[in-house]
Length: 218
Image 1 (cartoon, rainbow, N blue to C red):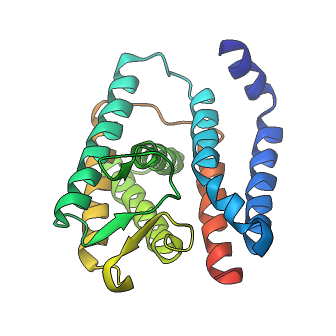
Image 2: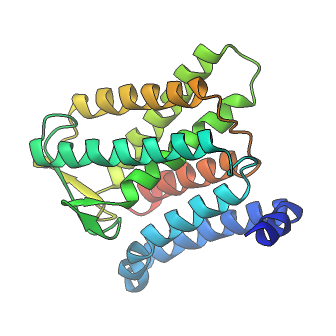
C-alpha cells in the first residue's frame, strides 16, 4: 500500500488525466446502446476505484480520528439510507435499483462509501479557500446539494434509485443538505485534514460525467 501510495503521488498529474479519460470513456460507453447496460454495471466499481485512489492520496490515513470520522459517516449515512428506504419518512418515497451494486436491507453498501467520498471531496475543495470554517462547512454542503440535484435527474437512467411517481420531493434535498452539514461539521470538529490533490479533480470529473449524461444521453 505504501509503495503504491508513493508511486501515485509521483504520478499525480497522470492519475488525474487517467480519471478524466476514464469518465469520458464512461460517457461514450453509456451513449452507445450496445454497451450501455455493461457500463451501468461498472458504476459501483468505478465509484470504488475513485474512492480507493482518493484514499491513497490522503496524507493521514493512519490517523485514528480520520478512520473514526470516515467510519462514522459511512455507518450513519448507510443506516439513515436504510431507514429512509424502509420508512419513506426521511428522503421521501424511493427504492434502490441495481446500479450501485450489492444491497443489504434493500440499500446498497456503496451508498455509504459514496457519502464518505462526497463529504471528503467537497471538504477538500473548500479547504483550499482561506475563508472561515463555518463558511467552508456551509459551501461544502451546498456543493453536495448541487451534485445531488444533477444526480437525481439521471439516477433512474443509471438504475441507481427510483422515486414514486418519478417526482423528487423537496424533503429529499432538505434532508441531503442537513446531513451534509452535519457530516462536514464532524470533519471540522475532529480536525480531519482533507488537503488532497486528487479529491477536487474526482469530484469535478464525476459531476461533469453526470451533467454530460443529462445533456447528451437522456
